[in-house]
Image 1 (cartoon, rainbow, N blue to C red):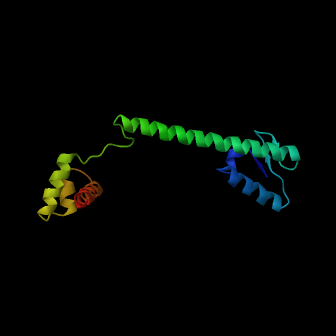
Image 2: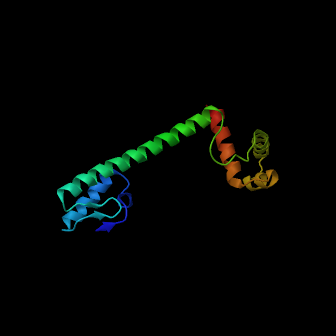
Image 3: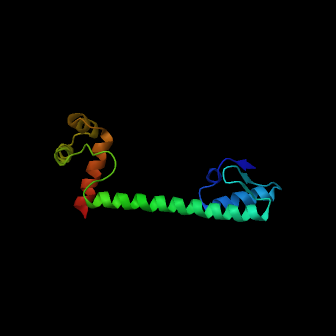
Length: 131
């Protein structure tokens, strides 16, 4: 089997090794064109494991940097994603309308937001009050 790059075959070192073993069990070899790896030779097998480990290490570094960046942003009050449409005033209005027996559809139309936003806001508020 031939692939363009080693990372096209698997997401982790364990996955890469399993894929290559399955290929070899079928009596075929594995070649990566970019890294010039050919697992039909002992040197190729060593290179395969080295490049696989380096690729996994790189993915782990990216994951750690992403988590650190999100934590740093949260520390200064910034949160990723789209801002909520349910402001505290809208949540309070939704709660009052719901207490009056209004439907979720009515509340959503009255506040100019989606039904899902109203549902989530009321669920969060009710779970917060229960604590």
